[in-house]
Structure formats: C-alpha cells, structure tokens
Length: 617
Ligand code: ADP
Image 1: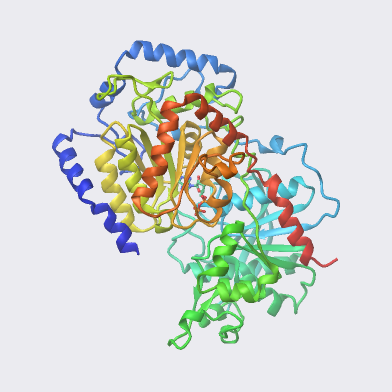
Image 2: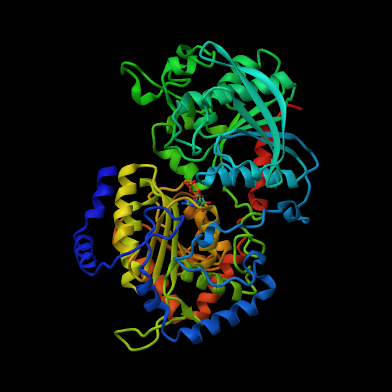
C-alpha cells in the first residue's frame, strides 16, 4: 500500500514537469525562520507575479483593509502586507493570547443531572495537538463544562508543552507510580488551558521528554501504559473519584484493565469507563511483558475474549492489543461518526470484538470547538469576518497570497489575463491541511496539486509527514512547485498558519481513503471554505454534494466516491466551474457552509447520554 502511494510521485507527467522546471529554475532563497523545505519564488519572480498595476492593486488592498478596519487584528494594525522575504514569517508573529472564557455560549442549556468527567488523553488542543484527537478532547470538554458538568483533562506533561499557554500552573501532588519494578516519583500539576482545567502528570524518568508530542527517544508504549496507571494512582492518592473516566485511543486503553483488575479492587469504586476510538488503525500492539511492567500480569490478557491481537494467534510470540483490551474492559465505547461505526463493524480485525460488545458501541459525530474555531473572533486572522460580512475573508485571502508570494487577486480577479481567452481570470484558492499519511489519500493530494494548477487555481498544502520517505517525496514536490506562481507546499505543523489558511481558502480538500470523522472539512466550512471530499466515514456524514438533488437542503460541498484521479478531477472541475461561472451561487454556498452548525452543542448531548447510561448513582 505504502509503496503504491509513494510510487505515485514518480508519475511520468511529474517527471516531465520536474525536468522542465529544472531548466527554468532560478536561484531561490529560504525566508528566515521557515522550514528548510519551504521554498518560495525568488524575489524577482515574486515581484513579476504581483507587479501588474501594483499601485492600483495596493490602493485596492489598503481600501479593502480599511473597509474591514473594525475587525482588523490589533497585532497587525499599521503593519505592511506580509511578504515571503519577511524576516519573521507572517504566521510566526506575536499574537494575543486566547481569552476563550468569554466565548462560552450563554445560550447553552445547563443539564440538570450533573457529573464529574475526567478525560485521560495523549493529546489536547492547542498545547499538545498532533491531529483531531487534541481538538476533540478540548471541544468536548468545553461543551460539557458549559452544560454545567465538572470536567478535567489529564495529560502527560510533555517537555514540549509551552508553559506560557497554561494559566495558574501549580504543583498539587507529588506521589509515586509503578513501572517495571520501581516506584517512579511523579508530580501532578494543575493549570488551565483555554478555559479548561487540566492535570499534568510528570514522571521523573525519561518518559515524555523530547521536542514533540510523539516520537521521543523513550519507549512510547511503555510510557502510555505508565501514564494510564499514574492517572489512577493519582486518583487513589488524592481520593478524587469522578463519575466517568473517558479514555481515548490505544494510548490510554490500558486504563480500563488497570481500573477493573487493580484499582477497583483497591479504593476506586465510583468511576465508570468510556472509551472513544478515533482511528481504528492504531491499536496499541504490545507484548505481554510490556504490559506486565505496569504491575498487571500480561499473560492473563492473552486470550481471544480479552486482549490478544487475533491476527497473531499461533505466532511466537503472540501480541496483545491495548485497544482491544480497552474495548473489552470499558463500560461503553464510541467512535467518531455514525458512518465510521458501520465501517468498523463490517471490516477490520477488531470488528468481531466490536460486534461482541455491540450493545454499548455508539457512533457520535465529532463537533468543532467553536470558541477556538471562530472567524469572527480568531486571534490569528489579520481581519475577522462572518457569514454576513465576508469582506474580511477576501482580505485574509489576499494577506495569505501576499505572504506566500502567490499572485494576488483584485476584487476576485487575479492580476493578469487568461492566455487562452484573453479575459481576466478568477483564481480559487484550495487548501489541504493534514497529516501526510497514507490514510489521507497522498496520491490524490499530489494529483490535486497538478490538477489545480492546470485548472488555473492556487493551492496550499500544509502538512507534516511522520514517515521520512513521504517527507522526502513531498519535499521534492515542494522544490518543484514552490518556485512557481500557483502552488505552495509547506512541510510543517503550524496551528497559526492553519487558521489563516482556512480563512483564506475558497475550497478545502479532504480526499481521504478513509476518515473516521475528519475535522478539516468542518473547520473549513466554518471559515467559508467549501469542502471537496471523498465519501467515506465522517466525511459522508458532514458533506453533501450540491448536485445531489435528493438532498439539496443539506448541500454544502462537492463529494466524490472513487480513489482514482478521475473521480477527484470530476469534483474539482465542478467546484471550479461553479466558482468561476456562478459567483452569486458560490457566495450563497459559502454562506450556507458557514451557517451549518458543526459545533459540539449539536452532539455533546449524545456523550452525556452515554455517560448517564453507565454511571453509578
Ligand atoms: P486527523 O485526526 O486524522 O489528523 P482530523 O481532520 O480529524 O484528522 O483533524 C486534523 C486536525 O489537525 C485539524 O484541526 C487540522 O487543522 C490539524 N492539522 C493537521 N495537520 C496540520 C498541520 N500541518 N498544521 C496545523 N494543523 C494541522
């Protein structure tokens, strides 16, 4: 699979293009502070790209900024337009800190039957986020807090966490937790992140040290098993007994085993455990002796009805799956969309375990955290906007185009003439913001890059590849395309830039091979970027094709089915055609997408129902 995908980069047309671009290549330079692979056009090319009628254009852009001046970001007032040659890239400027406490919606109804929920998780946005898991924990926690419940998040105190993003950080407990025959001195801190109470667990060994959330030079599996026990140990030491312990993914799936087979036998009686599966592909493969390091006897879980990885039965040695153990030992489990629930029951080696435990398995659609993802208040945007006042969105597009050295439009028309028709061109900006892994449809992303350029659009890919091979392939593409006037491939993680790109984009592309829920399409909609997606998992539950007349009241984007390039082309063609030829319809679609409620207010209630179905009164 991986080979097929990577092989797609060697497509003959790309090879030809590579050769032609090499011939034309001019010297390029890296903007200060940007990733090595982030190459933009040389200054001379850049000036050429935007210089046509530059005086008029600048006057137009300044006027546009002024017309949106009431919402202009104070951090940017009086500053000039960004440029790729800026010493500090525009997404690395100093931004004000979030004050989300004011964002808690006053109109949310409080629940009458309140409870205490503790999320135990490997990620939390924005301080320890790699993908959607971090967003979901923060958004769901905030939604339950605003319904009146008591909510805490427990997170490893990763060395890479920026402490300035934590309010009132205080050491609250020093205790010992068990690992591999030793009791490890461990600190628990309390603080607040984006309005949400968080307990940070900091062991005194090497666990969770390093520059990133994942991939430190310690044994990750053992670190998360340790963390799972350390959370329960902290509850036991402090006497905290929530109604619900909500664990997420394989990283914290050892907790249900530890709870029922150890801590419930000790002093923790009240909590019940729910597990959310965000992505079935990651199942926490584990050797018996690794699990034994937390003090459980790994051997007793090596049975089909407990945690043995069914695919390894008869192998020497057989393996365990922490995720399977979690599914067997939790009180209820959920996954992140109704369609993904069906998909996981029908395929994959864990389906038989899920079917056996079907009665308490729920498909609950993720929401987005509308306090953080709100174009009307977003601290990272140069100008804010909303569905009624879209002027600011156009400004954001121009801002990003200028900052990345892409030709800038004036009043929706890019400077320059269409070479074929002699008319002025309208240039849609497509963004794809994603982890660069096979699941995300890498061959479709690379194909879209080519296709968008051919269709006369612009495209920005913001992505990070955990796999070196994929990173190299995309770096080659970046070298090839970032010199040109249409495509920017930025191989890095940047929360700030992601906000600006969603705001700038006309379209957001999510061509995943499978997608448990997907947040990019929902965030895109909230920021007025019309989604083009493959019909799978949560994408099928949130994006409805505008040409599907059986469902026209829901229509909000472009959907394709196949995993071939032709299917993607069809959807992009339709999107480009509407954008270019029917601007009023397009604006209507943008407004409709923005007005769709993808917030947690819609779905957090389903989680509360699940919690209520298992809690002890
Ligand atoms: P997954 O959880 O599989 O990564 P989702 O669509 O559920 O996919 O969530 C992805 C989240 O991570 C979104 O908030 C998206 O904006 C963000 N994201 C992904 N890649 C990057 C990146 N390179 N820089 C900034 N944000 C990113």
